[in-house]
Length: 366
Image 1 (tube, rainbow, N blue to C red):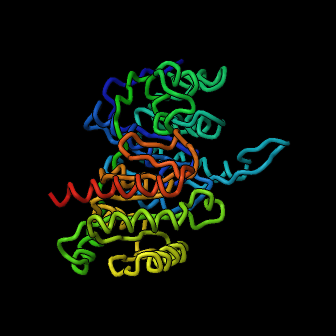
Image 2 (tube, one colour):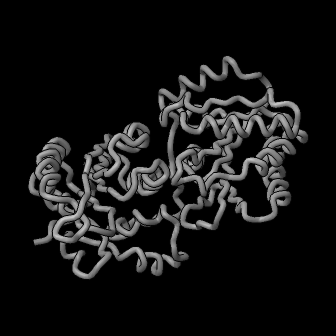
Image 3 (cartoon, rainbow, N blue to C red):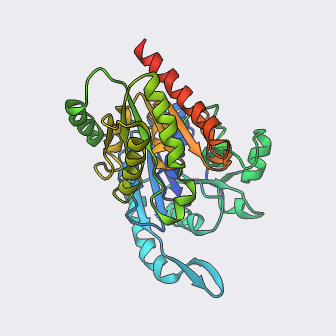
Protein backbone atom coordinates (compact mmCIF):
# COMPACT_ATOMS: atom_id res chain seq x y z
CA UNK A 1 0.00 0.00 0.00
CA UNK A 2 1.38 3.42 -0.97
CA UNK A 3 2.43 5.68 1.86
CA UNK A 4 1.09 9.23 1.95
CA UNK A 5 3.39 12.13 1.12
CA UNK A 6 3.72 14.31 4.25
CA UNK A 7 2.21 17.78 3.91
CA UNK A 8 5.06 19.30 5.89
CA UNK A 9 8.06 16.96 5.88
CA UNK A 10 10.61 17.50 8.63
CA UNK A 11 13.51 15.45 7.26
CA UNK A 12 14.02 14.64 3.59
CA UNK A 13 16.64 12.15 2.42
CA UNK A 14 17.85 12.85 -1.12
CA UNK A 15 19.48 9.97 -3.02
CA UNK A 16 21.91 10.46 -5.90
CA UNK A 17 24.66 8.43 -7.56
CA UNK A 18 25.20 9.60 -11.14
CA UNK A 19 28.48 11.56 -10.99
CA UNK A 20 30.70 12.81 -8.18
CA UNK A 21 32.03 15.79 -10.15
CA UNK A 22 31.75 19.10 -8.30
CA UNK A 23 29.61 20.63 -11.00
CA UNK A 24 27.35 17.59 -11.31
CA UNK A 25 26.48 17.49 -7.61
CA UNK A 26 26.40 21.27 -7.21
CA UNK A 27 23.75 21.47 -9.93
CA UNK A 28 21.42 19.71 -7.47
CA UNK A 29 21.56 22.78 -5.23
CA UNK A 30 18.83 24.41 -7.34
CA UNK A 31 16.49 21.59 -6.30
CA UNK A 32 17.64 21.90 -2.68
CA UNK A 33 16.82 25.62 -2.78
CA UNK A 34 13.33 24.95 -4.15
CA UNK A 35 12.69 22.38 -1.39
CA UNK A 36 13.85 24.85 1.28
CA UNK A 37 11.73 27.61 -0.24
CA UNK A 38 8.69 25.34 -0.01
CA UNK A 39 9.48 24.03 3.48
CA UNK A 40 11.89 26.49 5.18
CA UNK A 41 12.29 24.38 8.32
CA UNK A 42 12.89 21.04 6.62
CA UNK A 43 16.21 19.24 7.08
CA UNK A 44 17.80 18.08 3.84
CA UNK A 45 20.09 15.05 4.03
CA UNK A 46 22.05 13.85 1.00
CA UNK A 47 22.88 10.19 0.44
CA UNK A 48 25.32 9.71 -2.44
CA UNK A 49 26.18 6.21 -3.60
CA UNK A 50 29.57 6.88 -5.11
CA UNK A 51 31.78 5.00 -7.49
CA UNK A 52 34.52 7.58 -6.83
CA UNK A 53 35.14 7.54 -3.05
CA UNK A 54 37.20 10.43 -1.73
CA UNK A 55 36.45 12.72 -4.69
CA UNK A 56 37.16 16.44 -3.97
CA UNK A 57 33.47 17.29 -4.23
CA UNK A 58 32.72 15.42 -0.99
CA UNK A 59 34.29 18.01 1.32
CA UNK A 60 32.59 20.90 -0.47
CA UNK A 61 29.14 19.31 -0.52
CA UNK A 62 29.34 18.28 3.13
CA UNK A 63 29.61 22.00 3.98
CA UNK A 64 26.80 23.15 1.73
CA UNK A 65 24.60 25.56 3.63
CA UNK A 66 21.32 23.95 2.49
CA UNK A 67 22.22 20.45 3.68
CA UNK A 68 22.06 19.20 7.25
CA UNK A 69 24.57 16.51 6.32
CA UNK A 70 25.83 14.45 3.39
CA UNK A 71 26.74 10.76 3.37
CA UNK A 72 28.97 9.32 0.65
CA UNK A 73 28.89 5.52 0.53
CA UNK A 74 31.31 3.67 -1.79
CA UNK A 75 29.51 1.50 -4.31
CA UNK A 76 31.74 -0.83 -6.31
CA UNK A 77 30.37 -1.75 -9.70
CA UNK A 78 31.18 -4.80 -11.81
CA UNK A 79 29.64 -7.37 -14.15
CA UNK A 80 27.44 -10.14 -12.78
CA UNK A 81 25.65 -12.80 -14.80
CA UNK A 82 26.52 -10.87 -17.94
CA UNK A 83 25.05 -7.58 -16.64
CA UNK A 84 26.71 -4.40 -15.38
CA UNK A 85 25.80 -3.56 -11.81
CA UNK A 86 26.49 -3.82 -8.09
CA UNK A 87 27.13 -7.30 -6.77
CA UNK A 88 26.21 -9.17 -3.58
CA UNK A 89 29.48 -8.35 -1.79
CA UNK A 90 28.84 -4.60 -2.12
CA UNK A 91 25.24 -4.92 -0.98
CA UNK A 92 26.31 -6.93 2.08
CA UNK A 93 28.41 -3.92 3.05
CA UNK A 94 25.94 -1.24 1.96
CA UNK A 95 22.74 -2.51 3.57
CA UNK A 96 23.91 -2.22 7.21
CA UNK A 97 25.24 1.29 6.49
CA UNK A 98 21.94 2.31 4.90
CA UNK A 99 20.06 0.91 7.89
CA UNK A 100 22.23 2.97 10.23
CA UNK A 101 21.57 6.15 8.22
CA UNK A 102 17.81 5.53 8.17
CA UNK A 103 17.68 5.04 11.93
CA UNK A 104 19.89 8.06 12.54
CA UNK A 105 17.98 10.49 10.32
CA UNK A 106 14.46 9.00 10.47
CA UNK A 107 13.36 10.75 7.27
CA UNK A 108 9.66 11.16 6.58
CA UNK A 109 10.29 11.57 2.85
CA UNK A 110 12.87 9.94 0.55
CA UNK A 111 13.49 11.35 -2.93
CA UNK A 112 15.36 9.15 -5.39
CA UNK A 113 16.65 11.54 -8.06
CA UNK A 114 18.32 8.92 -10.24
CA UNK A 115 16.37 8.01 -13.38
CA UNK A 116 18.47 5.02 -14.45
CA UNK A 117 19.43 1.75 -12.80
CA UNK A 118 17.99 0.03 -9.77
CA UNK A 119 20.71 0.65 -7.17
CA UNK A 120 19.17 3.83 -5.75
CA UNK A 121 15.68 2.29 -5.92
CA UNK A 122 16.85 -0.73 -3.92
CA UNK A 123 18.52 1.60 -1.44
CA UNK A 124 15.33 3.66 -1.06
CA UNK A 125 13.15 0.59 -0.53
CA UNK A 126 15.60 -0.77 2.06
CA UNK A 127 15.77 2.57 3.90
CA UNK A 128 12.00 2.78 4.29
CA UNK A 129 12.01 -0.49 6.26
CA UNK A 130 13.52 1.43 9.20
CA UNK A 131 11.51 4.67 9.05
CA UNK A 132 7.99 5.86 8.23
CA UNK A 133 8.99 7.41 4.96
CA UNK A 134 7.22 7.75 1.64
CA UNK A 135 9.37 7.47 -1.50
CA UNK A 136 9.32 9.71 -4.56
CA UNK A 137 11.23 8.74 -7.71
CA UNK A 138 11.44 9.04 -11.49
CA UNK A 139 9.38 6.80 -13.75
CA UNK A 140 12.10 6.58 -16.39
CA UNK A 141 11.14 3.15 -17.71
CA UNK A 142 7.78 1.40 -17.76
CA UNK A 143 6.93 -0.12 -14.40
CA UNK A 144 9.63 1.69 -12.40
CA UNK A 145 7.09 4.10 -10.95
CA UNK A 146 5.39 1.15 -9.21
CA UNK A 147 8.40 0.90 -6.90
CA UNK A 148 7.69 4.38 -5.48
CA UNK A 149 4.78 5.89 -3.58
CA UNK A 150 4.71 8.71 -6.11
CA UNK A 151 6.78 9.29 -9.22
CA UNK A 152 7.57 12.01 -11.70
CA UNK A 153 7.85 11.50 -15.47
CA UNK A 154 10.87 10.30 -17.41
CA UNK A 155 13.49 12.91 -18.22
CA UNK A 156 12.36 13.11 -21.83
CA UNK A 157 8.71 13.52 -20.84
CA UNK A 158 9.66 16.09 -18.21
CA UNK A 159 11.52 18.14 -20.83
CA UNK A 160 8.49 17.94 -23.12
CA UNK A 161 6.09 18.94 -20.35
CA UNK A 162 8.25 21.90 -19.35
CA UNK A 163 8.88 22.88 -23.00
CA UNK A 164 12.64 22.51 -22.60
CA UNK A 165 15.19 21.82 -25.31
CA UNK A 166 16.67 18.33 -25.48
CA UNK A 167 19.27 17.55 -24.28
CA UNK A 168 18.04 19.72 -21.46
CA UNK A 169 19.95 21.76 -18.91
CA UNK A 170 21.53 19.23 -16.53
CA UNK A 171 20.22 21.22 -13.54
CA UNK A 172 16.69 20.27 -14.56
CA UNK A 173 17.25 16.55 -13.99
CA UNK A 174 16.46 16.65 -10.28
CA UNK A 175 13.13 18.33 -10.97
CA UNK A 176 11.78 15.29 -12.79
CA UNK A 177 11.23 13.82 -9.31
CA UNK A 178 10.20 17.09 -7.67
CA UNK A 179 7.27 17.70 -10.03
CA UNK A 180 5.66 14.69 -8.36
CA UNK A 181 5.49 16.96 -5.30
CA UNK A 182 4.15 19.88 -7.30
CA UNK A 183 7.50 21.66 -7.22
CA UNK A 184 9.04 23.36 -10.26
CA UNK A 185 12.37 25.03 -10.87
CA UNK A 186 10.99 28.46 -11.81
CA UNK A 187 14.42 29.77 -12.88
CA UNK A 188 16.08 28.86 -9.58
CA UNK A 189 19.85 29.06 -10.00
CA UNK A 190 22.39 26.79 -8.36
CA UNK A 191 23.66 28.21 -5.06
CA UNK A 192 26.73 28.06 -2.84
CA UNK A 193 28.21 30.13 -0.02
CA UNK A 194 31.79 30.72 0.98
CA UNK A 195 33.01 28.11 3.49
CA UNK A 196 34.98 28.82 6.67
CA UNK A 197 38.15 27.61 4.91
CA UNK A 198 37.28 29.91 2.05
CA UNK A 199 37.00 32.94 4.31
CA UNK A 200 40.38 32.18 5.87
CA UNK A 201 42.00 31.85 2.44
CA UNK A 202 40.39 35.06 1.21
CA UNK A 203 41.57 36.95 4.28
CA UNK A 204 45.12 35.68 3.79
CA UNK A 205 45.15 36.64 0.12
CA UNK A 206 43.79 40.10 0.80
CA UNK A 207 46.83 40.77 2.99
CA UNK A 208 49.26 40.16 0.12
CA UNK A 209 47.35 41.25 -2.99
CA UNK A 210 47.98 44.75 -4.35
CA UNK A 211 45.27 47.16 -3.28
CA UNK A 212 42.95 49.16 -5.53
CA UNK A 213 43.07 46.71 -8.44
CA UNK A 214 40.15 44.56 -9.58
CA UNK A 215 40.76 40.82 -9.60
CA UNK A 216 39.97 38.41 -12.39
CA UNK A 217 40.12 34.70 -11.70
CA UNK A 218 41.11 32.25 -14.42
CA UNK A 219 40.70 28.49 -14.18
CA UNK A 220 42.28 26.95 -17.27
CA UNK A 221 41.91 23.51 -15.70
CA UNK A 222 41.62 20.27 -17.63
CA UNK A 223 44.88 18.82 -16.34
CA UNK A 224 43.80 15.19 -16.60
CA UNK A 225 44.13 13.25 -19.88
CA UNK A 226 40.39 12.58 -20.15
CA UNK A 227 39.62 16.31 -19.89
CA UNK A 228 42.29 17.70 -22.23
CA UNK A 229 39.74 18.21 -24.98
CA UNK A 230 38.03 20.82 -22.79
CA UNK A 231 41.19 22.91 -22.29
CA UNK A 232 41.04 26.34 -23.93
CA UNK A 233 43.81 27.27 -26.35
CA UNK A 234 46.52 29.06 -24.35
CA UNK A 235 47.43 31.45 -27.16
CA UNK A 236 43.80 32.57 -27.36
CA UNK A 237 43.73 33.17 -23.60
CA UNK A 238 46.99 35.11 -23.73
CA UNK A 239 45.58 37.34 -26.45
CA UNK A 240 42.26 37.94 -24.69
CA UNK A 241 43.65 38.66 -21.23
CA UNK A 242 46.48 40.83 -22.56
CA UNK A 243 44.08 43.02 -24.53
CA UNK A 244 41.81 43.41 -21.52
CA UNK A 245 44.78 44.40 -19.34
CA UNK A 246 45.81 47.13 -21.83
CA UNK A 247 42.31 48.61 -21.54
CA UNK A 248 42.06 48.41 -17.76
CA UNK A 249 44.79 46.92 -15.49
CA UNK A 250 43.84 44.18 -13.06
CA UNK A 251 45.25 41.32 -10.98
CA UNK A 252 44.96 37.91 -12.64
CA UNK A 253 44.52 35.03 -10.19
CA UNK A 254 45.22 31.61 -11.70
CA UNK A 255 43.47 28.77 -9.88
CA UNK A 256 43.86 25.05 -10.40
CA UNK A 257 44.56 21.67 -8.89
CA UNK A 258 48.16 20.61 -8.14
CA UNK A 259 48.35 18.64 -11.40
CA UNK A 260 47.36 21.76 -13.33
CA UNK A 261 50.27 23.94 -12.24
CA UNK A 262 52.18 23.08 -15.43
CA UNK A 263 49.30 24.48 -17.51
CA UNK A 264 49.35 27.73 -15.55
CA UNK A 265 53.13 27.98 -15.96
CA UNK A 266 52.79 27.53 -19.73
CA UNK A 267 50.19 30.30 -19.82
CA UNK A 268 52.41 32.66 -17.78
CA UNK A 269 55.42 31.97 -19.99
CA UNK A 270 53.42 32.58 -23.16
CA UNK A 271 51.93 35.74 -21.69
CA UNK A 272 55.36 37.17 -20.92
CA UNK A 273 56.60 36.43 -24.43
CA UNK A 274 53.53 38.11 -25.96
CA UNK A 275 53.08 41.09 -23.65
CA UNK A 276 56.41 41.48 -21.87
CA UNK A 277 55.03 41.88 -18.35
CA UNK A 278 53.40 39.20 -16.20
CA UNK A 279 53.94 40.74 -12.76
CA UNK A 280 50.18 41.10 -12.26
CA UNK A 281 49.63 37.34 -12.57
CA UNK A 282 49.45 35.27 -9.37
CA UNK A 283 49.38 31.48 -9.60
CA UNK A 284 47.67 29.66 -6.72
CA UNK A 285 47.34 26.24 -8.39
CA UNK A 286 47.58 23.53 -5.73
CA UNK A 287 47.12 25.98 -2.86
CA UNK A 288 43.37 25.55 -2.47
CA UNK A 289 41.07 22.68 -1.61
CA UNK A 290 37.53 22.44 -2.93
CA UNK A 291 36.34 24.31 0.16
CA UNK A 292 38.99 27.06 0.31
CA UNK A 293 38.53 27.66 -3.41
CA UNK A 294 35.21 29.30 -2.51
CA UNK A 295 37.22 32.14 -0.91
CA UNK A 296 39.53 32.48 -3.92
CA UNK A 297 36.54 32.79 -6.24
CA UNK A 298 34.79 35.30 -3.95
CA UNK A 299 37.90 37.47 -4.18
CA UNK A 300 37.26 37.93 -7.88
CA UNK A 301 35.30 40.62 -9.66
CA UNK A 302 34.94 38.17 -12.54
CA UNK A 303 35.81 34.52 -13.00
CA UNK A 304 36.75 32.84 -16.28
CA UNK A 305 36.83 29.07 -16.54
CA UNK A 306 36.80 26.09 -18.82
CA UNK A 307 33.97 23.58 -18.39
CA UNK A 308 35.04 22.31 -14.97
CA UNK A 309 34.06 22.40 -11.31
CA UNK A 310 35.21 25.98 -10.58
CA UNK A 311 32.96 27.24 -13.40
CA UNK A 312 29.90 25.89 -11.59
CA UNK A 313 31.18 27.12 -8.23
CA UNK A 314 31.59 30.67 -9.54
CA UNK A 315 28.05 30.70 -10.91
CA UNK A 316 26.68 29.31 -7.64
CA UNK A 317 28.63 31.91 -5.63
CA UNK A 318 27.11 34.71 -7.68
CA UNK A 319 30.40 35.91 -9.20
CA UNK A 320 30.17 37.21 -12.82
CA UNK A 321 31.30 34.18 -14.83
CA UNK A 322 32.64 33.66 -18.33
CA UNK A 323 32.58 30.00 -19.36
CA UNK A 324 34.81 28.77 -22.19
CA UNK A 325 33.69 25.75 -24.22
CA UNK A 326 35.62 24.12 -27.05
CA UNK A 327 32.42 22.56 -28.38
CA UNK A 328 28.71 23.12 -28.02
CA UNK A 329 27.33 21.61 -24.80
CA UNK A 330 24.03 23.35 -23.96
CA UNK A 331 23.15 20.91 -21.18
CA UNK A 332 26.15 22.28 -19.25
CA UNK A 333 25.39 25.98 -19.67
CA UNK A 334 24.09 28.28 -16.94
CA UNK A 335 21.81 31.19 -17.76
CA UNK A 336 23.78 33.37 -15.32
CA UNK A 337 27.10 32.80 -17.12
CA UNK A 338 28.41 34.30 -20.34
CA UNK A 339 29.10 31.36 -22.66
CA UNK A 340 31.90 31.51 -25.25
CA UNK A 341 32.35 28.85 -27.91
CA UNK A 342 36.03 28.75 -28.84
CA UNK A 343 35.74 27.03 -32.19
CA UNK A 344 35.35 30.44 -33.84
CA UNK A 345 38.21 32.53 -35.23
CA UNK A 346 40.90 32.90 -32.57
CA UNK A 347 41.16 36.68 -33.02
CA UNK A 348 37.42 37.34 -33.04
CA UNK A 349 36.67 35.22 -29.95
CA UNK A 350 39.65 36.76 -28.11
CA UNK A 351 38.17 40.17 -28.87
CA UNK A 352 34.78 39.09 -27.52
CA UNK A 353 36.29 37.77 -24.29
CA UNK A 354 38.49 40.83 -23.75
CA UNK A 355 35.54 43.14 -24.48
CA UNK A 356 33.38 41.38 -21.89
CA UNK A 357 36.18 41.49 -19.32
CA UNK A 358 36.75 45.18 -20.01
CA UNK A 359 33.04 45.90 -19.43
CA UNK A 360 33.22 44.20 -16.06
CA UNK A 361 36.42 46.03 -15.12
CA UNK A 362 35.02 49.42 -16.12
CA UNK A 363 31.84 48.79 -14.13
CA UNK A 364 34.03 47.96 -11.13
CA UNK A 365 36.10 51.15 -11.63
CA UNK A 366 32.98 53.31 -11.75
